[in-house]
Image (cartoon, rainbow, N blue to C red; front, side):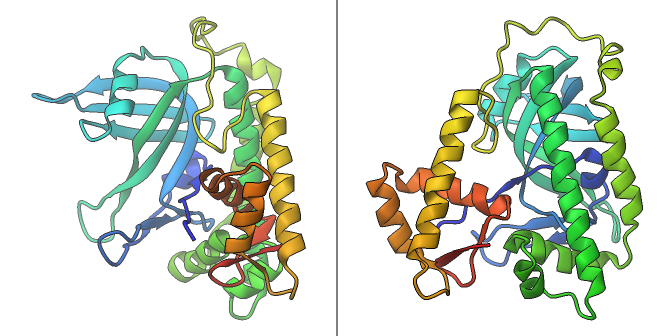
Length: 301
């Protein structure tokens, strides 16, 4: 089963505190950075204000940029191997709201020290409405990770299986267990306060102080399968997720999960091709609505 890496929504405050890296074994195995709250990240989806950008390349363009969200700053770097993102960055004049999907890069100047940054795959100018939507959704995701951490702490030995049984996705459950192993005691109250402060940022009076240029000409576009800005498109996405959820439940005849091959076949009869099904199933996994009890099977939570 193809398992596309989820683009995690994380605030800069959590992202920049990440100090644990899991190196993939083998040429094509992905590496992950584990955040203190258990986000096991290979890719991220962030939205904020592009505040600084600089081309530091000599022969080839190589851009460095900063993006601020309500909790801190993300650092980006993009060169010739990210042509789409590099081209987009070269055309943006800060300050502007931007959405970024990208892979995580780490830098360890010395043992015990690690810095994280983003190597963007796609950069898009967006509007304040999408920024606010991202803040809201990232708050939800952050609080869910905090909840998973709290549940894990109640266990004598934190277990991935037990967390999945409680309704958390496989990736989050694995990340939470690895976070506890690597970070030990994490100040969850600090991260909860961070999320609450980010929500306060959405209050109307907070918008009056942001001096941004008119961005009416830069209409937001769908930049990732997780981001749906058009209400009609969003409804279509939700309808298809309901179709796939119903199929998973219907095909789970033995109570041990629906075979992936049968889901693919039945989804195709409903007009959902394999590639789109992969994206929908990843979205359902990310939302914690389904999980994979074993490889090749999917089960409704």
